[in-house]
Image (tube, rainbow, N blue to C red; front, side, top):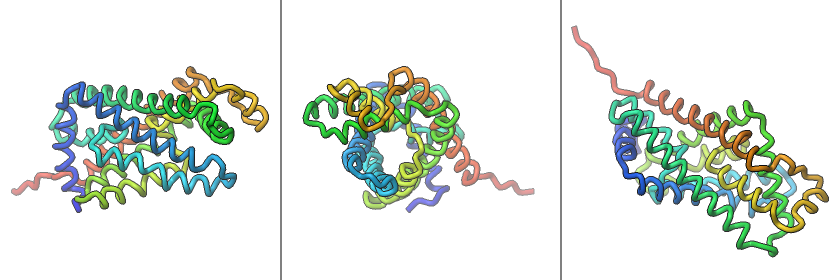
Length: 272
């Protein structure tokens, strides 16, 4: 297992390779990561939609959702939130800001495409056979996220990516698959149970709700269950969730990377 100082040295090189990767490779790897995180969201929704006890549902979601990040790490896919750790490479002067921003922008687009594709496929292929409870869970989750005030979404995004980047760091400190899975599991489990906001996960959750809302009888089902889905619009998705959560994720992830770098970087010992 790598120490924090050894992780800094290792990740400085990883970030350098990420900054120098080709656009097509980053885009495709980003699509894979968006799909993997979306799978974590999909299995969480499918496993908890019939559970009335909120605490139990959160715990089950916390156990299942980390599978998405574990898939990202093991397949070597590119995840926007985890790549905020490239701040380490920036501070180590191994990359330029332009290279980091290029990586984040292309990977963000890829993540969006991968998660959006899965959201469309889940709703389209389930079709009329989709359980009413699953439809309600999908639209209610999405509507609640779309109704978040900007400041709350920002704050929950900051807290979330502190934990996600800690999960990536802990996973990359391990030297085998089991160690990486265990390292990624804990922090992600915590952010899910706490209800923090992850922009890539929301690229699945909210479009899935938007697609589900177009299904026949969805509005009637929601009204019958007393669920208000009026906030569930593409505009609210972007303005009340995706933008503030993305900004918060950037602050939290880059902030943690800066803190890890500041506390564990090598310092030159001067002699008289």
